[in-house]
Length: 159
Length: 205
Image 1 (tube, rainbow over the protein chains, first blue to last red):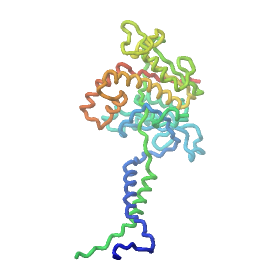
Image 2 (cartoon, chains in turn yellow, blue; image 1 turned 135 degrees about the horizontal axis):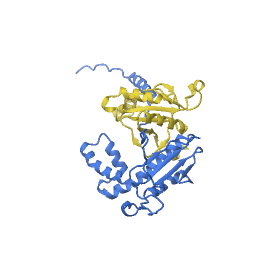
Image 3 (cartoon, rainbow over the protein chains, first blue to last red; image 1 turned 60 degrees about the vertical axis):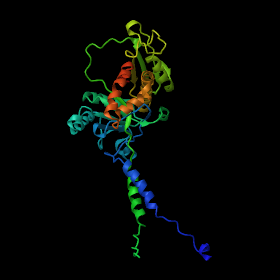
Image 4 (tube, each protein chain N blue to C red; image 1 turned 180 degrees about the vertical axis):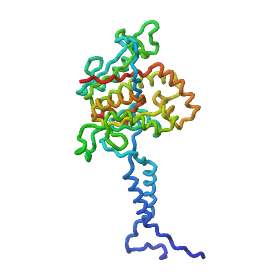
């Protein structure tokens, strides 16, 4: 009954890699779905503070983003290490905020112009002075709905 | 017997998929899209601002050394929430100003009722943003704690807290019918504990 005899000797069979593409495709689809393409490149450090009493931000087309923080390492030599405001793709001063918000508001659809939220994505190490200045500018242009964007986490992570 | 067609060599499939995978890995930034919502006061000054009694204001000051002063007493961040809850839930008013759902100490020297109670948050220009956010977070948490309590007390059949109900209400996947049913309930609770949190302009220093 040599039919049932095990083959002896010979080399180990190669591990089948036929399922490798499937695994990789699975990962690929996950990242494709989870990816959000950034609208603007960050030029400031942006380690957001943590908070746990958060609400979800509105849909993307109803939000105006304002970034602030210290310039990132590659801009430090040019712009110094004091916290700065970033609007779209460039550093700005406080007095530009109002004009920026008005310009952004004008690009939105008319029915959305009254429900816009301004999201402040500010680095945790920034002084409140800068944020107060931004808030004053926002009040001047009547953009009163704001959102302090945060990570989700306990406040003890903020130290 | 049908002739077997030669198999397509799928060996390079993995390489192609890897290439795409790495591209998406590199470009992915998981965007944070949640935070603390606030409403700024409008610019125009009131001509005669309403008189607010001192006992109805709960002052929280964060100074330039990131120390927290609550009602002029130094306090640790971990105690802010309970202090705010105690103030809001005090209900020390008499007669018309009494609060029949408050469970506080009914102290005459603290707030009359949650509707009158105002939390005033002041900061210095030198205060760190992260500390300010932590304090804001704790104050919002105090409101949420009280709202949760009342919500579960009045609407036990909902089997969720105020925060969960609010989240469900703002979720776009919720059907309009459910939303319409939730809205009046949420409004009742919001009326009971209105979020009166004022962010004053910072002291010049």
